[in-house]
Image (cartoon, rainbow over all chains, first blue to last red; front, side, top):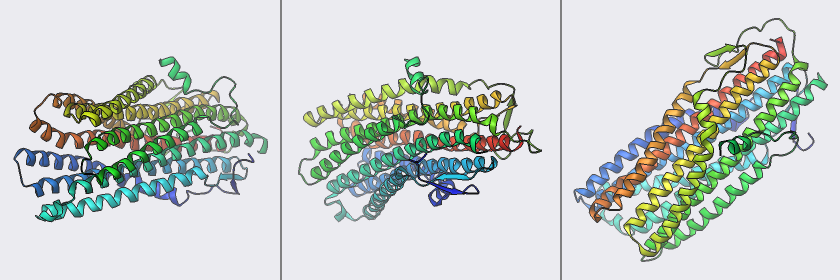
Length: 203
Length: 301
């Protein structure tokens, strides 16, 4: 047990701030994702139709930017929803573990936030920021192109390549964070398994 | 194959519950390798943006990025396997400790409230069909996914060298089918976790000779299955359409590629949305279990 950093209290602790956010935000983020994916796909079909009709280059490029922005808003939302749902699971372990210890009449030991949970939060925030910035840039450029700004066509391909590079890096950060969030669950399970085996001797 | 996969998600006989998990550092290392690959592709992309002829570089960076994502997802799957192993060690711990912790306060005798419909039985409930499928399919799905993503990466090297439309279509079709299968494998692992929570909770209650309360399949779990199936269907469909597009004239290819990219992303998006709901279902099942354990510790029944 010495290898676990814990807080001891007489009552079970409630969820910490990231866990409270997780409990509140996983549903809105999932709803946003489920709206964005079909809209992004419809915009792609509209663009494909514009290509087939040999529409103006600004319209085709504008639709590409806006469609990509909407689709990636969906990815940002769904990866955030996954991260928040993991935080909700960690919150159940924290509050449930505390409630069980309290019910046995022993002092409540709660794990302090482990380093893996911090990596989880930082990676998720980096992924979110990177994708959000690229979505905003796509929307601004796309709106300009759809408004007929032909000058925005200059350097369009290079811009798209750079934005795509950043978006993909954002996904890598999100996935890396999710791995660490799930790894934190293993840490918590091990702590709780050791703790519940201690309780009969303390009761 | 099924037996091997089944053994992987259970602790070995005589496993020490105090020992640190091996799956956790392994999963982290695999994920870190994936991030390294993603960074190589990232810098390759930035370099391509500054050149007059970026097509060749973009082809292999596309393949490498998708390979990187697949690698990190394999890391996630490894950690999920570790969670499954730990869940069984937790069940053993609760089973051994709970008889000494049973309370005698008045009350009890009813299922925990506030978690939705609860089934009552005298023994461990039989696994649901989806749980049996999940336990059987997670391994094959992951294995096939890794193979398709790897084959797609090799196709991307061919795309980078000859620049042909066919290689481009095969790369994208193969890799996103692989990504879809890996996500389906992860979804089935999450389904296996739900199955373990159900079986383990039942085992603990039965060992105390108590009525076995089991959470009925919540709406989030049902929607998870629907989204996963829809996402997987789209992932398979996009592969078939890419293979078809590889044989078409340039103008048809241009139009097809314009909507196929977002179509395959829609498939992955639905799979990921299903994963959110699976995680939410796990959180709900855990909340129910802790309340049941607390109830037993307080009232003894």
